[in-house]
Image 1 (cartoon, one colour):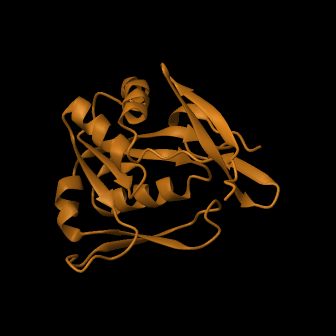
Image 2 (image 1 turned 90 degrees about the horizontal axis):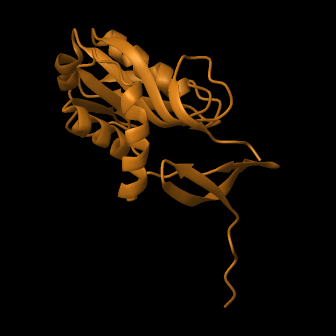
Length: 180
């Protein structure tokens, strides 16, 4: 049986280099597919690059599941902060969740974020930094910001490992992912 080889793209963060697969979300458009899940060395390298971009006046980090969780955890651990994760579907244990639609050009389909009401207390009156692995249109980041505002918190910064294109939000990132 012959295995097809996948085209890859090199990414270097600090002293860590990865060859990531190229993904074709639309005909003729290829983008590097970054995945932080299970790659501790890569996540730590990215966190080290992002740590100086976090403001001093941060109380809590917030992200959306799934791929951004390891990066958020590493940043939270380094700064001794807690973090909150918005879910992509309702869980049976959620009571009176905050529901926020995501306007995302990247996904090409509607998405909804869910935040269990018990996390509102953790966000209330807190300075929150939003964390993502990759930001393209900024739709998920905007949805997270709305959730923080609805929970009575203040977004003091937005950080992401990578950006694609030019999101219309101020976001501190480490590197750009090209469209090939």
